[in-house]
Length: 278
Length: 132
Image (cartoon, rainbow over all chains, first blue to last red; front, top):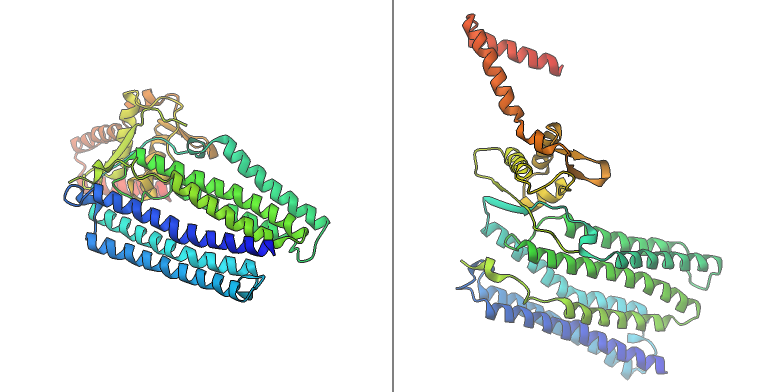
């Protein structure tokens, strides 16, 4: 029974952290940035009207409120029905589906940021373009130790899969697991490549700000790779010990800790806003 | 992880000079003024083209011509670097040299009475034959 209560607690935590705490903090950062850098002093920061920005942020807020409502409804239904599983269904499936639902508002905000930067590029079409004349290399932005850890954690995961190929347990998918973790690494690697050599989305961003942003994003992507491969290995071990539910709980806790970490490292006050002045 | 003083490169898309020429001139100037030294690494074609928001082929053309002039050298997958003799090679302007050589030749043709039309036909014929 204790594991059911633990699952409820962790699920509640996931609702709170991903759909309440983090969105609130992000909205707080955006609002603070808008208050401290008003349109009349920093016109280039506003390719669209402030009221349009606020309306979009409001949609983000409503979106999150809806997700919280769905999450609390799932939790309430599980408690009322005294179900061992969330919503009387497979815990892992519920956690995954709900997580995807929780990502939707973030995705909305991401798409809005992308079109915001596109408008910025259109409005500041500068005939005089400038760039740093140094190559950007991965190790300029992330330590060798972190990259080595990512490689070793991948190998650890692959070795774990090979171990269970030799000693399979009920429901073990076999070598397909390696494809799964490799796909995650490939996706994250593509993200890192794009961040290093891809287009500059914010046309006004200084090279120092870009460097700080690139460092932050690449570090987070490498950490995601490390955590996902370690989680993958742990979940296989737990599944072999018939403790899959604990794997779900660990996954949810991992996400919450990661979100706290992301908020801790994302800082808007380091940004050089002078480039947005008239 | 720190960066040394960063050299910047710029292009003006409204300028009458082609973009690849602007890149070549700045890189040669940077070599002559010791802003970049022999052995220094250059950004990749993709990185520079994306940062300047210009076509990759423009940067590739600039790099190709600089390599031909011995200002830079490509070392396979390791990337592109400033050539050991870049400083000496940057002082030679092949375009200028071609113009002056052609000018001398055209002047001698004019002196013996060859018309401009005949010169164009002969020049085009030679160029086309070389390509074929």
